[in-house]
Amino acid sequence: MGFLVAKNGLPTCKRLREVLREAQQSDNGGLGFHMWGTVVDRNGVVVAIAHTGKHLGDQWPGSRIISAQKANAANSLSLDTFALSTANLYSAVQPGGTLFGLEDTNPVNPQAVYGGDPEEYGTSSDFLIGRRPGGINVFGGGLALYAADGRVIGGLGVSGDYSCADHNIAWKARHMLELDYVPSGVDPIVIPGKPNDDNIVYDIDPKTGRSASGWGHPVCPGKTKEIGLALPAQHPIRRR
Image (cartoon, rainbow, N blue to C red):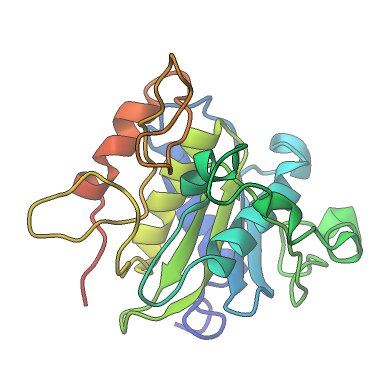
């Protein structure tokens, strides 16, 4: 298992690339683009980063940093008892929202995210590994990672497609990593016998632009919403 697990139960770059590729190749309702994925530990330090394309330019170059932001945000804003995905943050940070201005509180560290040899980006030699990228991202694609004992041990960030598809891919990848022992969340959709989770919420009124729960995310094109709403049933979170 040494080549699959880095430290504290988190995946290596190789394992992250494997699950990210498998999740990206499934139907996520998006554009089908290649993806970037980043994993941080509980201290916000990058332990793994990968991309699904064969070459560096096969996925959006900007999504490398976005994926790191998402991983950092989900980890930074989740607890052992409560999980927030980056998809849950969109409405909360709008003017009048309960977390307005949140994205400005933890800026990206440019010395971490822009350093090193670009040819090594997305590999085990990526300059980001062992560094804290910082950043707060407020749309779909970032999830906290929970070990079997219920502890949050880090965050996963995925970027490269519609933000709704990013969330769908991240959810599937987390499930494959078996790091989805999520305690509770803000998703208002209740599955009988199970607590709420950190799934994406689609409850923004198209006329008013307001989210009924305060945690809503915009609807993206394609089947992203349909697929997203089915995630808890098709890829259920694990229980301790």
